[in-house]
Image (cartoon, rainbow, N blue to C red; front, side, top):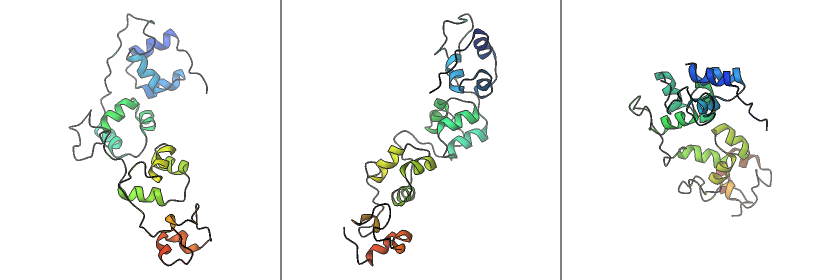
Length: 198
């Protein structure tokens, strides 16, 4: 993994005195927008130019369309933070209702304990023949989370597969063990299958 370049004093001066968003400053200095935020808030480089004030953790004023994007987007917070030029913490605070809670109140906020996926999405994840990595990329989650959903460690209360279903068959292994095309198209085919064994 490449090491983040060390910032020079002139870079730090520019970061602390400029009103440019982190997403515009970061490429100029070869660092991430989060690194720019860390300097501005005094988490890093506190000893360089101590006479210049550091900011408290505040969010850049977001426009209404940006808040809407944060609340409705399925993108992960890292991608959105790079796109909008705010920190991941700001994205997560908005999504959890800790910031801008009174803006667009008709759009759902998701506290940490709230569920991210609907029952239909859980059904799709469990019934999919895609790999955990492919599903993780599509849904913007970790591949281990996909495995936990499939193994019913997460969302165990949502029983998405009927009792007689191809996915419950002993011969199912990323597809029908007998190569029956009907099983690939419709998992409920198990009720008619002569080879079904639970």
